[in-house]
Structure formats: C-alpha cells, structure tokens
Image 1 (cartoon, rainbow, N blue to C red):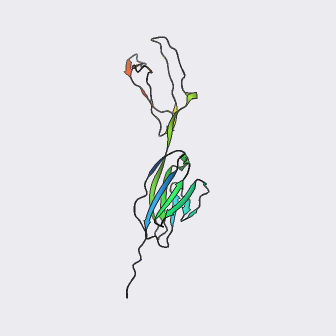
Image 2 (cartoon, rainbow, N blue to C red):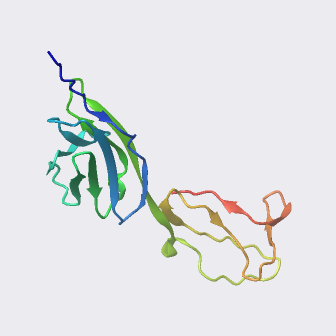
Length: 174
C-alpha cells in the first residue's frame, strides 16, 4: 500500500513591509506553497478588519482589490493610499491552526510649508531683533532648517545676550 503525502500549506517568504507615498498604490505580495483547497485571506491587523478572502473583496473600501498568480502568489492592492491605511496587514491561510504573515504599510506625506502660519518678508534695522515663524506638515514630521539667501551665517542672540552664529534647527511643534 502506497501512502500519499499531503503537504500542509506554508509561506515561501515573509510578507514585506511597504513604504508608499500618499496617493500611490500599495501592493502586498503573499507567496504560499501547497495551498490545495485552503484559502488565503487578508486582514488589517490593528483594526481586525477583513479586507479579502481568496478572490473576494470583503471590505467596503472601493480602493482595495485582490489578485493572484498561479494560486501561489496572492496580492492585496490598495489604490490611492491615505494616511488611515497605515498599519499592519496580515496574510492568512485558513489552516487549523491558522497560519499568518504580517507586514507593515507606512504612508509618507511629502513636507509642505503652511504659508498662513509662517512669517512673510520682514524688514528690521541692523542690530534689531526679529522673530520668524515657519510651520510645516508632512509625515514623518519635517525638520525645518533656516538659511540666509546670501549664504552668510545667521547670528542668533539668546535671551542671555550670547550671540551664536550658524544654522539653527527648529523642533517640530504641531
């Protein structure tokens, strides 16, 4: 009597983390072997929201779709990614116990200066004091660096009266 060996499904490679600019498409790729009659599912792990099961999209998010290649590579596509899409996604195989791989979707937002919260042109007599404000948004939080147009060093006078030359880096304050 010859026994047939039934292979359990398994992941061929880990689910990769993705970093995608806001507005672009993110595609997770889940590679499995010996899937047989089992099904692949996609879940947004932090909210436990089911995205798709096998070839069927479950979420009501119209930007989400799924596809596959030869029943071995399964894709979760998220079009026009938004900041709320950021988080951990899980590719699952419905074995008992369930098998899963997780990957993180990072959404980056290009830095942008907020004109209405930033200083405009200011004229000050030589030796005078001026306070300039620059606010910016983005993710990760942008770093603001001050420079003179003529590339000369900026002189900063501290409250103690001490003068410092050079570049001053500002902290981000939301």
